[in-house]
Image (cartoon, rainbow, N blue to C red; front, side):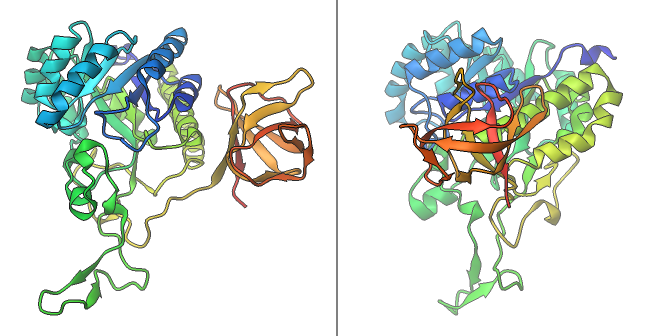
Length: 413
């Protein structure tokens, strides 16, 4: 194995809530990125209070993982004093790094948290090695590449920056229609600013066109009675290209999805964890398991897959024109909270299931335990034939053993 492969790439996973942070760590994340209650770009996620960040960092550190906090909005004058106060509180939480995109916020972070590791968000449009060198000179440890870069461009960046400067790149998840996420559509249509964390995702909406002299006459962009989704990108997936990502010199493999469920996070994290571990064990082992990775990654929700810009400019095949819905092959049933002495599996139910259903327990080693539901009991111990209502706390008898922390899912019928 070449010298480049000795330093193992980090697997960086999103978490939109404390529950999902634990899932990400349990399923193999080396690091987790989260948002506080303000100043990140996912205002609609559950997000983390200062106490949540502290507790999350403690949990991650106990499992040899790290926590990065996003503060990557483009700040206005009225944000600055609040950001200063936030950073003053954040520095004592145990967070390992903070992601920023605004130069003014970067300088505030250095002033308020002089010992905090600082990363530069993809929102800063980092497309060339001079930009990387600029941020390195100011004290940034890591820069996240713009999604529009090819592997050849990333290799060139690696060749021109100091060895101790880290490159982070997205390898999986939703792609934004706008250049590195700089988008005004949401603000224009709804008054909710994507660059302030409140994107309504108008790129996923269905559009027609209206000719200037014929107001009210809607014309389809494409001859299809279902309409067209001209801005709707496929999801990025690089699970089949781990060797190329490593050889390009990427230090951190980033998964997109702070708005995603625990099932999504568990599925993607576990699959990339196995793929990375297999590759670093031997290239042959990785190649032999490619079919397994493809099968497992497709068990999460997705919009069809693309390799984005990594192998050159994208074409029409990177877009989805006939719908805006996810492919969903499995339903999230619950996250095992405890197993009683008499074998009852306790969790808060997420989707409907019934006695007799076959569930998959997602083991932490990458395998699955297929088990059948023998009985369902509510909080009062009353037997139920099915569990139709989300957020019920249940005790369930299964015909196979599962462990606390494991995700349970059911194949869609």
